[in-house]
View (tube, rainbow, N blue to C red):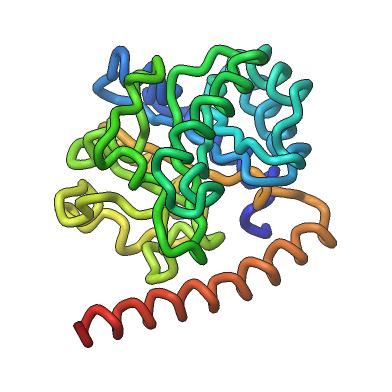
Length: 267
């Protein structure tokens, strides 16, 4: 069976349901962390219809997860935001304000407040997560170097608020679960301290079937899974287009990482 389809994601949900893992939103984990849990998180980057399909599927299994919405025209759709919240999922803010402000922190803070307030018109929002643009020279997480997201009534930001020395972080960034050298912005602040590195757990994980096998073993107490719903579709034409476009993007991201590595060595 093809990977990264909604049918394959259903298999993942069924695997979770067959175990003793408790599923959790980001908010619920930060408020009351469970000892044996899977945190499910989604970035609503594009293709809102795919996000709705995934949210409905999860709800059919009585599973709640977190959906981080970007504030851009094709994604910020009030009806979709309200439906996902109505299904019992957490709605969060997927901010990219440093990109929009071109690195101007004060302007970025103003945009952050305005867009967060706008999102809160349609759902309760207590956590926010940065959006990573691999082609930008700054990172949206830089907004918090001298400022505090808690000043905006938020209780957490997954890249800062989750202790990844205790939580295994799995992401489908690059349309693969493998920890390949194609992640420009979707990286942990201290990767050497994360559970992945310390235990070498992810070295053999490449496909969703590998993730399912890991879950069924129940050897890892806490797992955070980031899945981008726009990558998970059953239709062959759309699935193929997503595959081709992601492979092209991965080539560009690998080039960026290589170039930055050469520059750092030159300095």
